[in-house]
Image (cartoon, rainbow, N blue to C red; front, side, top):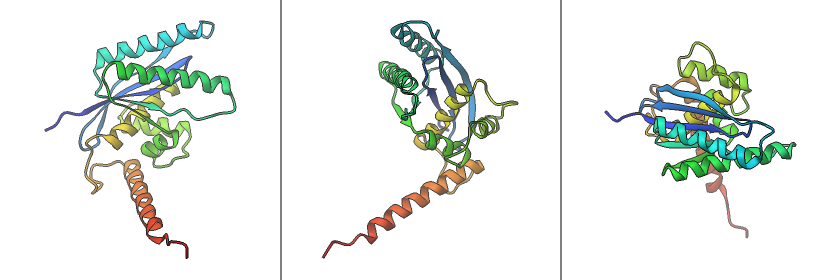
Length: 200
């Protein structure tokens, strides 16, 4: 029987960088390994803050030995200052993964929400609630950055890992909804391509 896939999920941020590590087996059952945040002082120099994030991520990788890293993809927001900080933290996360020789990927917020809840526009409370159910926790992880990091790790493991077959066995309702949505999307793409006709 193959060993579980261990994934480090990272919710990038300068003040709080969420970290979540899960083990996921071939039946898509997930187990919590580690959850927390790397914090940096808001009044520190940007270079010092990024170095602090890098050090925190390196320590977690060394202690827990993940096989892959997943980072939430940064999207533009109205607050450009926040976007810049998040993008810089994301770059550091990807750099640390590369330094450790780990494969890394990014996932959009809607991808992550769909993977965990079956709904790409779910709110944070719904995501936190599903994380607690999936990982069999008494309460949702806090703060929200930590729960988001776990969701990112689960999304990556279910999408990239050696997961269950397409029959949908051993899947949670959210996983089944996500798998069904992916199949529909693939089917729609094939139909759209088939219907294209050259201009006359």
